[in-house]
Image 1 (spheres, rainbow, N blue to C red):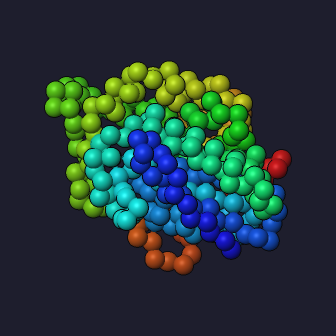
Image 2: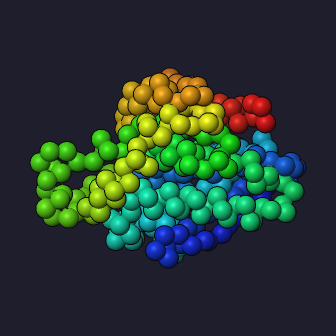
Length: 281
């Protein structure tokens, strides 16, 4: 098993840390690019075990940190750069994902183990919404898979009085239940969405997809309603859904994750996704 660690430039000069895990036993492998979710990062929980599980089945797995996710190269698994977190927005994340895809085309141009034109996107939670947007505008994406993906970014912004307070003060905070930190969101987050609303409307963009889509959701997801999966399934032209019974938002994982084996629900998530990627490969 080989894991490549790289640092590339993201938005506003902020770094994107990434790693690619693959096996030398296979050639011409499919490549998965994984997008983490809100308050997440590439080394959260059992993502490393998931990467290994894909690689063992002959699928290279790339995971990365968005440039403004809130961590730093010196401390990538903590949120030491809350200024960057507050300045994040969906447009920056799309550009970061584009930069990662560009990097793979150059980095694996002559690598016999990874096929740079067999790119599959997987996104979890907020990242699950983002992959619909990217696939709709980038023909390099072959298939996409959303794990607990959101269907609408706009409805997740503060509403009513909370929105007016955000607009007046210029920032609102959300408590990170794991770290106890108050995570800032500058009002530019909403302004950027409004400016780029057509590009950032998940359900509308999902209607235009030419790729095959797999929508996976846990039936006991406490963070993103199962209804959001159903709304996506209604508009995706070439899609299928798979519901994991009694699974929560993270399929039984937690952070830190110290077990050597994946939880059963996570293993089911991985197996179904691998089967989907291999269909018609």
